[in-house]
Image (spheres, one colour):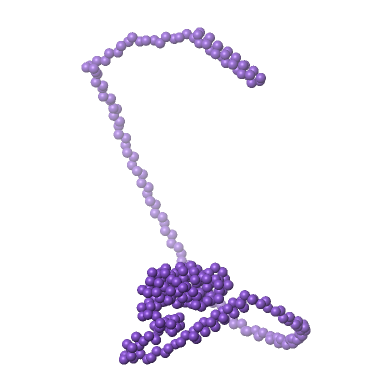
Length: 296
């Protein structure tokens, strides 16, 4: 209601103001605008030439001469030089050295302190905890070592004759010679039952096949959990390598004794054999797979 009343009052005020302005505007007289009928004509022919302005002559003013200041000479006063009298040097009197009194120190006799020894407690022997897992590992490692020694002892080494210029050709053709000591240890006397083509392939590619396998092992990494428990050792692997690159009869001739490492070797060969060189005939391959914690 208050808003409505205020609105009505303001409208009435505005209506009064409008009425007042309208009534006063009607009373105002309108002043007419005067119109001039005077016409100015300009004659272009008889335009008067403007007269030149007269410039008044100004008398030249005298130039004032610059005032030159006279320099006054300063009088030079000569200073009197006073000669200093020579200073007599004082005679240095040497003092006689004063003899110090020597005080003899009395000897102090130290008393021996006797410390009573406490009765020593008897050491109680505490039995050490027995690590059964470590004992089992040592036993398995010792067993493998003995098996390897037995395997090497079974190999028969046939000494080769001295090679001389006369017997050189005969020794090269000898069926009982080995290309190197590694092949002699791995293949044993059975190496002589292979064909010359198989022997040549083993001699030229056995180290290469082992390097490819060890490189693949490094790339795959140490078996999980084997590194933490300090597992390491060497497997002897054998399989047949076919001319098309396939392998068969894969087995471990020598086991390490740790299941993680033995199983890893078999899975490793199944991956690495794809990079092996191909033989012309099926050849039996035997080589080492080494596991060393310091190599990783």
